[in-house]
Image 1 (cartoon, rainbow, N blue to C red):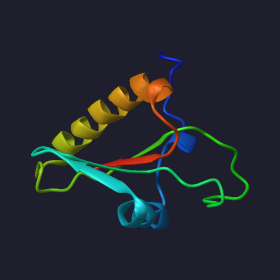
Image 2: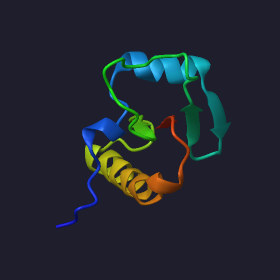
Image 3: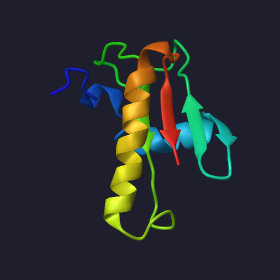
Length: 98
């Protein structure tokens, strides 16, 4: 069992967070995926009680990618694992992979 887990604080989960990242963030697109990222300014408070947790990841994998849930979940597992490995080198902020 690995000790390098993907904690709940490292996830973008709320719809309002996704909407904020899509609206105010930057975007880079490839034919296979798109990366949206947003680094909140110091005066912008996302969650007042939460300490700085470093980069957070959100995933949006639609049924257009793979009709079977098994395939979509595998894609998400691979992306989470890659994010987990590189999390220490990423700048703080929120990242959403579509």
